[in-house]
Length: 94
Image (tube, rainbow, N blue to C red; front, top):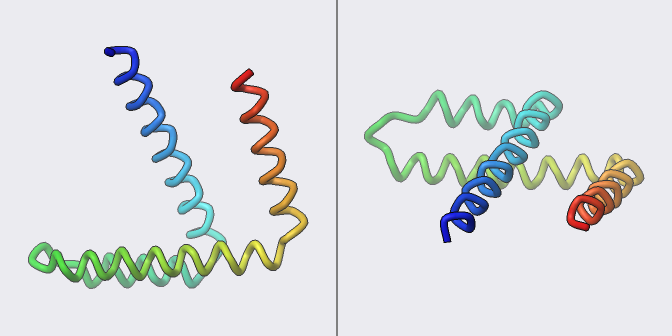
């Protein structure tokens, strides 16, 4: 049981790291994403928990829109990256 918990924590940390990497790359590439995050950070105050939820939702929508727009612009590269990632994951698992 202890090994299962350790693996779950490890997988969670890897997933969080990958998500942080994707967001960092999008922040450096897409100006809409960086504007949205700057707006959310600037307008957030400790007393507005509901406002923080709305800001996170807006950031999520902007993230989704940015990924969709960039994937349409760079479709062949995106297909290559997805297939390459899938192949690497299958090689690591076996």
